Image 1 (cartoon, one colour):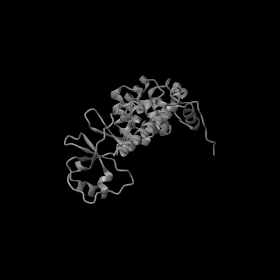
Image 2 (cartoon, one colour; image 1 turned 60 degrees about the vertical axis):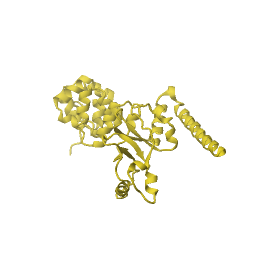
Image 3 (cartoon, one colour; image 1 turned 135 degrees about the horizontal axis):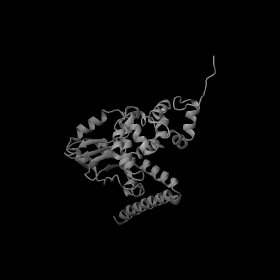
Image 4 (cartoon, one colour; image 1 turned 120 degrees about the vertical axis):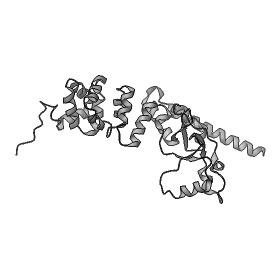
Length: 283
C-alpha cells in the first residue's frame, strides 16, 4: 500500500490533516490565505474542515467575501453555526449586515441555540439580556390556584420551577410564590393570591447594575421583561455573579469590580439585618 499523502500543494481540493491543524492553530493566517481563492474553492475547503472550525475560519474572512459565499451557495452556509463555538458564531455574525445575520441564525434547527444567538445579537454581552434563559412558565393571573398546583405536581422535572403570572395580554403581572403555594394546607382562589411583589429587570440593564439589586438578598432568580412588559425569560443570581466576575477578569481596568460588587451586596445584606433587628427592638 502507498503511504497516505499529505499534499498541501492543492489545499483547496484536499483539506488534509495538516491543513486542518493549520486552520485550528492559526485561523487568522489561514483565512488570509483562503481569502485569495475563488468562492468555489473556499466553499470546497470549508466543506472538508471539521464542522466546529468552519465558523472560526469564515469569521476571519472579509465581510465582502462572507457575503459572496452566502450568495454563491446559501445551502452550504447552513452548517456554519450549527457546531461552532458560541464566540466564533458571534464573531461571524458580527461581520454581516443585520438582515443577513437574522436570516442565517433562523436557518438553525436547534431552538435553544437559535434563541441564544438572537439574544446575543440584540443585547450586548455586558447587559442582562445576553444572560436570559428561556425556561419560564407563564400562568394566567386569573387561573385557579388549585389547578395550577395540580398541574405543577404532575410535571416530573429536576429543573427548578421558574414561574410568572401574566395578564390577559401576556404581559408580566407578578412572580409566583411557589413555596407558599406548595406549603399551603388548603389552596383556594386564583393564583393572584400566591404572588410576590418583584420588580422585573429590563434586558438592557448593565450586568454590574443588576448585580446590586436588593432583591438578590431574598431571591435567586428574577424575571426579565421588555419595555412592553412581555416576559423574555429570567436570569439567576449565580449566573449574573459569574458573568460579573468574567467581565471583571477580561478587563484589566476593572480587575476589582467583582470584589466591589460583593462588598456592596454584603453591605446591603448587613443593612437589611440591621433594619429587622431595629424593628424587633422597638416592637
